[in-house]
Image (cartoon, rainbow, N blue to C red; front, top):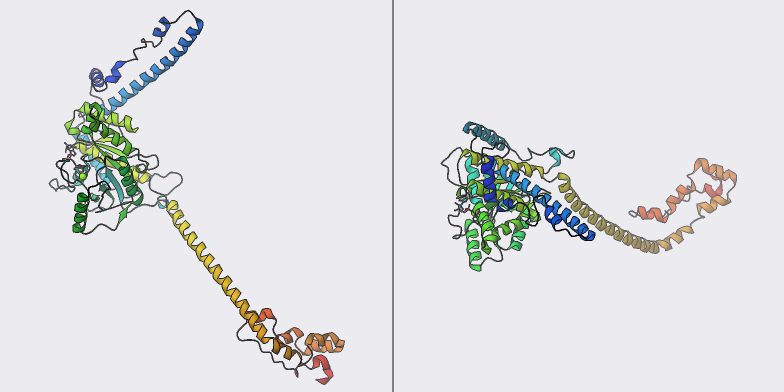
Length: 491
Ligand SMILES: Nc1nc2c(ncn2[C@@H]2O[C@H](COP(=O)(O)OP(=O)(O)O)[C@@H](O)[C@H]2O)c(=O)[nH]1
Ligand SMILES: [Mg+2]
């Protein structure tokens, strides 16, 4: 069903009639005010007055350019519609589809997170913050087929065709609770490469959806987590809380979402296109508003769209839904909108695998870089360090001030003793000043220099501060240094 693979088997006349049937606006041709050449009508109505002519000329040019744009747009839409129709070509040999499916499945089965990172901007695999498991988030309106899609995807990779469905599908969407607890499904079962997260349906209130999506996309998702909204009735909330308590646990592992799969019901989209009923019209409105939620996009990469319920529509209707969604959401309908009906044929399986390949490729392409992560960690770490340094600085300052006070107090207490010492004999410096040259020579050879002597007598305040314990001895051996003032002949 890949549009790029198929060759058209639909004849051009058949295609034209399908186009006119599905896109009535395309068969209208030019706006009624214009002739075929887009100008003749104006020329016929032109007056004799040159000014009027000039004005009409201008209008003619404007209308002509509008008609050119209109024609170009028509051609573009026809070509897109043709491509989408071709993607439903069923003339491919079964063997070829089977072979393609086998190869595509093998690629998915050999996938490991980060395996499809493109080496761009000089980044290596080690520069990315690669998760253990790539997480794909399924979102969509109630009954769009999110849980059914989990089962459809799971079946493609199950060897056992009779294996039971994994996700709980609502048989009747208007009855029952639907999916209230986030559910993680590893694909295939037992693998850890990638997982699908089935979620609670979108609300009719867009602001509530934004809140919910912001939470999942920024804080991550957790298996078993209950999703209740303020708008839920108190009875429902109580019932869900009870269920949450009964089930007993939710996973402690929070997974960041790596890509989003937006599931829509093709039948509801078609109804909203043709209906006058407000409620039905609101369906596409809800899809467009939610799809444009900035949290769902990874840089410029918008979610992939899966259209379900195609088995209830004709092929031209399915093509019409895809083209319309492409126009509405601004994404290519042939490559980013996948039609996955409730069929078990090979073509549908191939589309499922193609859709997974697209999602995983884009998940890998948008993995966050480690620098970003490290940057955050570093900022927090630096802040903590700065804080510690400030605290340390304050502590040192306080200790210093206290130390100075203590020293001054000690000095005050010690000052009488210091004066007393000064009277035991003449201070060495004074002695040195009045001595003869002979005495000076003798001092050089036989006695320690006065500075050293001074250290034994009374340490200067600076040194005293450095070596506060034990306090320096204040006694001096005057006999040993008597030659300083008596001369060497007394030795
Ligand atoms: N015919 C048809 N029915 C579908 C398809 N996908 C889902 N459904 C049905 O739609 C209903 C809601 O599906 P469910 O997966 O529970 O929707 P959810 O609320 O999005 O999880 C169920 O009855 C499904 O059987 C599909 O592709 N074709
Ligand atoms: Mg569900």
